[in-house]
Length: 596
Image 1 (cartoon, one colour):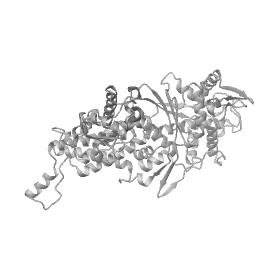
Image 2: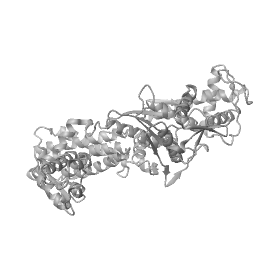
Image 3: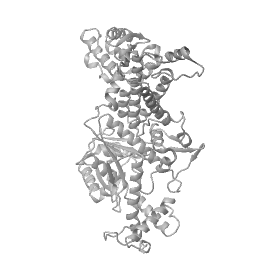
Image 4: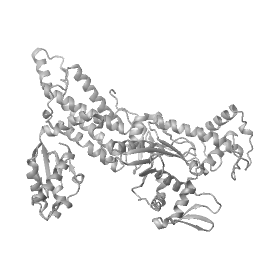
């Protein structure tokens, strides 16, 4: 019997007590939904397999003492199928012990469902637009963006496992001053000049500049001899903006797609596949910015002041109003944010019911204005728009921090990380920590094959379970004759309980936007499995005493060999663990090797 089944049973008992007039002043409308009845694993296993505080939740509404009300629940639970015993403890906890067959039923449930075990549809009918990474195309993906790649893609997989339709989106910032500085940096590098004070430097700038020159030469364009003075026209014959030049425009139009291609390749190699690559420039070229401003103006949230156009965001909880068109006629950056959110919510294809933004720690100040904008469009902040703020990543090697700075050129990139420790360790280590907390990445630890390396520890549990399968096959052990009620040892019970908790954990990880909970669960399951493996046998152990002969050797083998029905049951338990670990690792974008 699973925790969910016990929650449902407790919910039904509460309603039965009401209908029979045994629940005091409690009425059916005061009973919370089934999911609100938490069924927990007691810290002290002597207290049973599962515990509930349902009586304590409802006692006040019933006008009864929690312990007295718990006794009523206990009397009903004792008569339920699959429950061995029930006791009331402390102020009113209900401790439940299952019979062995009921506890072990989860094994067949896992094996029948396979990789779908624990998945549900409670988020079905909703389209969640999940935007993550969205780094500027002025350089390779740095370690902060790499964290969002791991967390974001894992979150998308977890949300899909909960029935949601998820649109993975990358916002490509190809408009604005940072792109101008990128182009200036390339031009300077191409001429062997010092990097502009506000520019970017590093080996990748020299590489991209050379690629631009080679590509332009192949197209018959002598890019280095184009005018470098301000002004001129762009590739479409339109006047260039102040501070620009024909040469800079040529570098920009060729270099930005190059960086775009590099970013796409890095994401693909990191096992992250985006559904939408959205270009910021399109918001301007397609008139989306003007449409968004017109929409807010019609709603009464736009005003003019000091020659500029303002969004009256203080009406919606922001700390100050925001300029969206500056007095010189240029758009403020926030104008694109407004248009982008409106675009997500009103697309012809996959309009977002929920727009989830995954932003870096330096964007914390954006939350107020973003939520104000969401409300101004008639949506619900925190519901239609959700903003997740990630914290910093520290990369360590040999006990020292690896410094990073995109402009200084000593950036730690996504490719650097995967070259050092591989994609599996990179993704797992970045996704296993709550994005609200800073994380230290120890390159030495994560490249090691030791139990201190968390990804290795979990993957080894899967590989070990596969080895058990191979040994069982060699010994002729199959599922035939399996009796899961024989999974009655303490070690068996710990593994069974861990498996039973997976569905609730998966649902919680989706609702809380917390993929790191999957990693923590996997580590707990792996630890429980490793302990089980060390004390219980599926296949008889090999004779370890080379001096043992004849009857003595046979006695040792017999002592190590479980009876066939128990061996078959343990093989099923082994394979159930294997199934859940493989599923959990897949949700994190990590492989489940069968050998290590």
